[in-house]
Amino acid sequence: MTTDIPNTAAADARELVLTRLIDVPRHQLFRCWTEPALIVQWFTPPPWKTIRAEMDVRPGGSSCITMQGPDGTEVPNLGVYLEVVPDQRLVFTDAYTSAWQPAAKPFFTCVLTFEDEGGQTRYTARARHWSAEDCAAHEKMGFH
Image 1 (cartoon, rainbow, N blue to C red):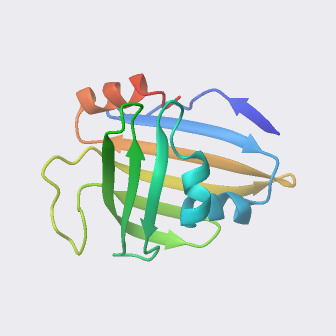
Image 2 (cartoon, rainbow, N blue to C red; image 1 turned 90 degrees about the vertical axis):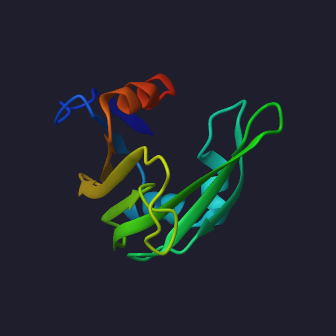
Image 3 (spheres, one colour; image 1 turned 135 degrees about the horizontal axis):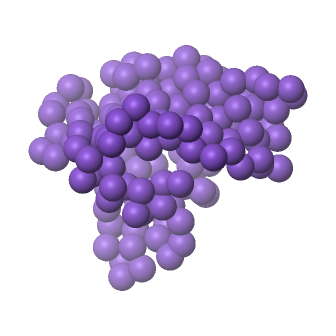
């Protein structure tokens, strides 16, 4: 069961915040973000799908989550983990592609937190974008 909570106030026009109270233990939510076999099941909304996930979940480790569009076009999403606190916090960015190689066009940094609350998990996702335009585009993609 998920209880929808209105988005909290963003720090500025470049940040989107999503908060939910979810009726599962936080270690299960953390697994959904850190295990390739699980992330391919939910990461992309239809008609898109996630076809591959490679994840080295540790600070400095890289990830590549590949989505496929309805026309068959594959879109790899490269990034690097900045902070990993099992079952509590996960921070990653696409500002780097791997091994601290700068991305050509960074889009955002994501800060995920998982907190115990009354036998459930308070899940908060903060998407911090490089520009207000990127933030607006992400919101149009359905980040709310």
